[in-house]
Image 1 (cartoon, one colour):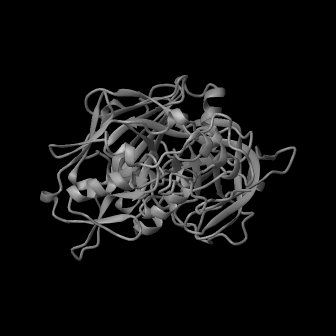
Image 2 (cartoon, rainbow, N blue to C red):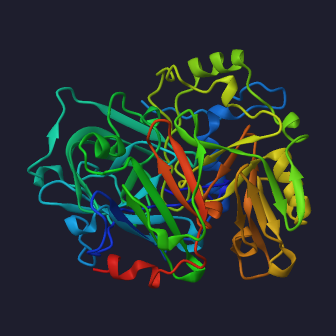
Length: 483
């Protein structure tokens, strides 16, 4: 199954859980290395389409009414991820063009190691299992019969997800031990796939890090909730450092702590606007080179949902979930289930002169509302395509950096990152795209240039700092992923 980030094909960050074998990690945190998949080939069209599917409930047409057309219905020897000395640190590997970030997670007793995608845009934990008769034969599959700690629930629960690219996954819910970088979560709810289509053989599943209301299975606690409830981490935080394919790839995810060597300056915290379970923050303006783009006039042109619209939407459109390997996994909640009572409200929507923005590791591109994307594209002399992406010059000297202002701090997307894909024949795809959303989606094009700390406390916050560039990872964390 392809994962996508842009409306067409660029949403693709796959984070797998794996811990760096360092002995000096603070107690109560997990570090997960990330790395890329050299066999993956980016498809910007699928990525963007998946992003549209994931956020379909927020799509509004020109008249300001919600669009109902995009509904999605939802009814290793190189590294031992179980070592306590990992202390919550999971190395990540990067997929080509920074489409996915993958890390290792162990499930069951004795542990079975899977490579999963860590996704802040979903909240489910699901993966391929031996119960799946039509799964890709090259995928590693979890065998629940070989785990001494596995159990079924008192009631047999089912789950099902359909993605924006037409691929699907479904299966049964069970419970088992899940080890993240040496921290063992006991009796974690897991979703075993008994059916899936078009799954990338490198990625075995998804581990969602969004808020609980994104979970497709009602009442199922997320891994992050259980890490906190079982006192496995001292602080209710996790932090990402995403490497860059052009500079060796790699990356790391830390549960319960941060790595000060991965960023420059100070971390700045921002309050979270909980957009239907997504990690949302506020954007104030953008700057291209030295030219300021104010949101004063732009926000008035971006369709907004009224309270009446929201009441109508929440009763008809299910929650949105995951993304997948190679791009962005776009999922939704159980068919017919109503959204939580704290679902999107008028005060969470964009108001002049600011825009809301969602931090989504499961999306590859930065996706702007169309009116803003077109203004930015014009500044770069970029040409729009039918799928919502843009063709941009391949000459870096003609691409000034893009700076996003969050009010109390600003962060730079360098010129190099604004070229998502170079076909080698003189045509380049931009790292940004457009969609009919009333907010911005900050995918990996942005996130790989900052260090991000997600704080699940009360109230929740997101802290950002400019990342050390280029990130210093050795050969895409190869030592943690080679068998």
